[in-house]
Length: 88
Length: 171
Length: 111
Image (cartoon, rainbow over all chains, first blue to last red; front, side, top):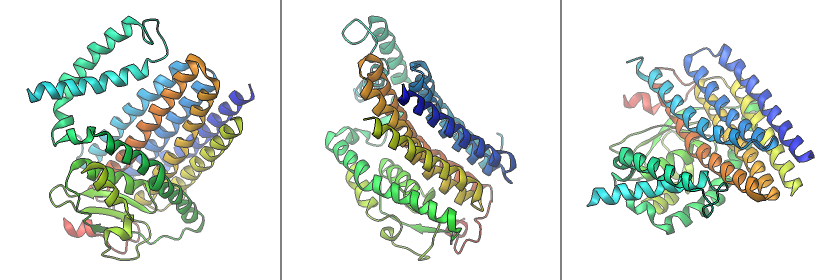
């Protein structure tokens, strides 16, 4: 019981960090800064999903976390490509 | 013949991942019959689509189990220690704000894509360094170093023993 | 067993927070990538390891499923995170962003 609660609190702390990162997402002077902030938030969201899935015993959220990890990686690569040579 | 072997190996890897993901739920052995059928079909499609990417440059040698043992030792030993050190290093630089950055070049002498990828990822996660670019032809690494001590460094100065580990694991 | 979970969660929380602070405090894109990638990868690995330990302690079908999913998520993060940050750093350099107060820039000389 108390272990599940601590997992949930860990998820809430990571969520607060994701909000801190979104400050950089809002103010970042260049597009690359915003992309880095988004990449960091993606990593945090994967960890949050795994923690929440364990805390509430929802296996399906952990499956979503796996898919999200791979899809966000592909998204990061496309953003990088766009930064490199523009929309083509 | 070679192509069939490539497709079969890719199919086996994809099917293994599918079985891992659906492990605990089922009545037919550990898995249910529907899951086994769906996994086989999906793994076959994935194998047909992607077998060219995986084995193009002699990927067969990566299936050698001895390399996996060395890789695991590397992962929990020197790599993990360097990663912990890297985080303390970042903490020190966040608090003091003392940085002296620059982009340096060195050549670790790795030939294959797998070895270069392993070394580049290791460099990114270890203290004070970030791989910016790898020259495909010459194998030069361009690394953003947060605390430049030497403008033309030897590989050992930037990333310690990692090139030798990468050579043993992937080449 | 529970103590191990709390320790892993604590380490994960500390280093993820360090990554978020580094993202805000460092002066340019490259140093921000340094801090963000290293710290969030390390912190997330420990958060996910806490879940793996929890699943192992729980046992049964659900527990085994949790352990497998947590370990797979860990492998994915460890593979994709440095690669993604490398792609972003290279893109930033090709887009012409200069490193802050750099003492040397071999990549610029190379072009």
